[in-house]
Image (cartoon, rainbow, N blue to C red; front, side, top):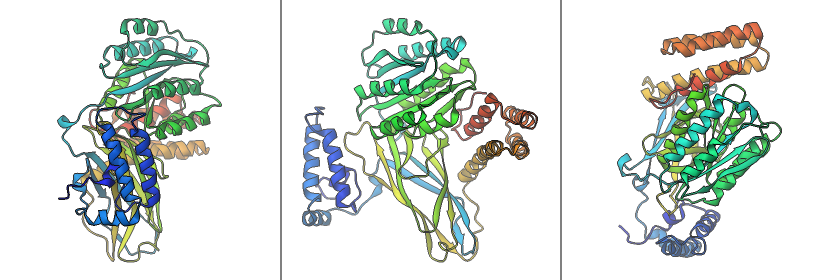
Length: 492
């Protein structure tokens, strides 16, 4: 085994990286580790090692000599374990389009009890518009106070309130006067309209004040209403936050908030949105969100990929730790890998006849990039290669049980998606028929309460030619929750 440092690992790149990729990785590492910006113990030495890595790898002759001294590449040393399961053992030589599903899973190589919980840098962004008056506001204040009291010494917390303007109620800080802060929270009064961008911008600014790669940097947005006219500004801000390593999660209360917008907002950063149907559930779901952040092993998980010729990625859905739709574009933000729950995603590929001629079909080739808060050095990317052999006859071997279960539950979620699309297109009878079909499947899964809600909405569609706000969200997030790890359910 060579005693020389692994310069590729220092820069977080593959051994076949281009000169442009080496240069970009060096500048990113140098900015993060430069002594003028980072004086953490030991990191000056790491900065010098990174400089040496660039000096060697940026010169082709020196790089070739260095490469010759390296041992064989071994992914067994990666801190992340990768697994892929497929819906079929092989593709068949056919003159028609074929579908194949891949279930991808990443988890820590270390055992849960060996992983250090990272410190948090979190800002709560709380809607206090007039519509929050009553139980919603009371429960939000109680939940915020409860989280404040349970804060760890190493955690940074800030609180922003917003309506049609934003106020930094509690500036982000490590050492808070908790009694004084509780008084401030209790004095929040509902007023004004809902302009999410105002609150989100202030919340992101608070997180930026203490942003640190060794912390989990996150904004939790809680709202009960629509925002009007500033949606694109919010999405642009989320994209900027994602580039800086700041995640965004959304909690929507009641029936009036825009779930499509909140889904997209959170997805831009690899975050998630959740539905709170009753005020009594606010504290539990906010606590769950906080607890999940303390269990982050790796953050900013991003899949950079390219599909093979004649192959199209048609659908992508994260199953856990939080379920939700994923972008079909590269790079694909995936969110976080937790200490105790794998990050898993289900991808649907469409393969054209021209691709399934002979040999093997390359479905996807790419790399998973992550950042591990407990490790100051960049984490080398993990290769992701998905392919299937082409055979003359279909394999009789059934798919793995894990992918059958995932596909079965995801099918329920997609049925409600199609029903909503039919309703939006004015095809109310088709939408109602799909919901009735969905209810039958839910009953077979033992989901009686959700099946009743679905049947009521099917009747409502025929009678009123529209979904009810609560019913639509209950069905959407109820079927989505079926994909969550055991013990995490929906509120309905």
